[in-house]
Length: 559
RNA sequence: GCCCCUAUAGUUUAAUGGAUAAAACUGCGGACUUCUAAGCCGUUGAUGUGGGUUCGAUUCCUACUAGGGGCACCA
Image (cartoon, rainbow, N blue to C red; front, side, top):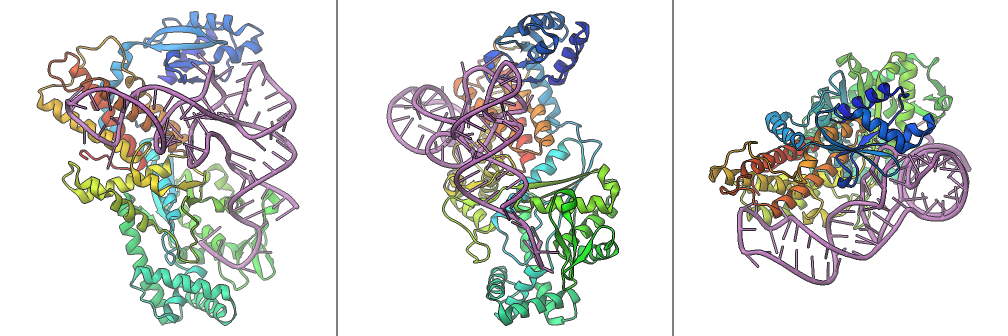
């Protein structure tokens, strides 16, 4: 609808012999101002040297009758043109939503793209910090927004299985006699290794030696500890990903990408890189950035070189990619600028493609600071467990058949919703108390609205009410004014890489539905409008379900 | 020291350069007791400071203040 209006306005400008300018068609914040409004007259006024209100009058005249769904055009304020849509338009949107079903809200704005999206990417020898979950949650939502827009999409996980962090963990396993098959011991081993490393001295050198040995792969005992630790960590990661609703299409390990990256760096040591203090570096200053080390003075690849190897593997596996997107913590924002600069220097053809880094915010707790080094972290799984525990009683008292499943759906919903609610990149202050309360602007609020709708549909069915559109009320319900915006929101959320627009929308539509529900009896067999209300209710339910899916959140039928 | 990001109500967050800055939590008040009260209705309360651009600035530019992040062998 929005694009139809934009097109009609452009045609009107041509008809009036006016220049084309950049104007917007938007939803006025006050619904009394209509369903859409455009500022075209005001933008054009100065250029044309005319009064904006007079100009708006001319445009209204030229626009009148051109778009069937438009009931009324009015001039307002300093020169806005407000557009009111017809009753039929809103009814048609309900028909359309119900007909589309699971496809409702989809679009094709990314149908020409092939996207490799890398996210989650934990270190296999560090406990999964709740901060790691942020990347998973945002990344997963982006993958779904891309899929919803028709993209060919590949989900990539890039866990770290070799390097200093792994060496610390393996050292801890060996010298503290910890069990590599136990996930808690793995966490303790890393903390011990890190403390030893920071203390310096002989132990630090031991850890460096472990690191070199692991790269060389010539110490069977260390190799075995590393392999067992990795297996333990990956098994647990897989469980968490299942619970969160993420599956990966493929994985690249740093132990694979490192050697490939090293080769590339060594091959280009004269044209792209240079040797400095025994290390191989890239001089980012030439493009306004900073210098970074790609191969350290011990001859081992750093994150930088590994990422070049990672890029090469992706390139080989998916040569037709158009977008390579990596979601990580915001502290890596500057790093990725340098990395991408080096990639463009190495492979000029990459300039024609889209290399994107999406930095996420830092997650802090309102209740105090966490430190992964000291081990007093709130791990991803412990938080999920806590959320599930908190919801257990409610879930048990609910109408759900499978209480455990509902508890999990609500816990995951609460967590994801709170993280996706704000703009990507903003630091997240995680309020456990609020997340645990499940009230207000929360995942469970929207999930509850969905369950309520499912229940209403069931009741209507029992009452013998069948959805149809023959008897339509004269006035448009407020909720109908939100429904048709769904497509606009999903496109915008994807284009901006900002799922929070969708979150805001779902809260609005859920809230509008709950108001509708409080004001109107829906499943009333004696009500002539009941079939229409039912159709509307179904459409809202479908919107919420599809919208939650794009956030990676399940929509329970009963709760 | 240099670079990047951020600053909105008591708190946590919204607002593609537009009209009276939108919610939630908290506080206070209320309705129904009819389809799920994890709900609904009402109410108090905000754009860090100074300039600039613009018909119009929370949004763009600039200086300052405050907070976070980064700046060579971690990821």
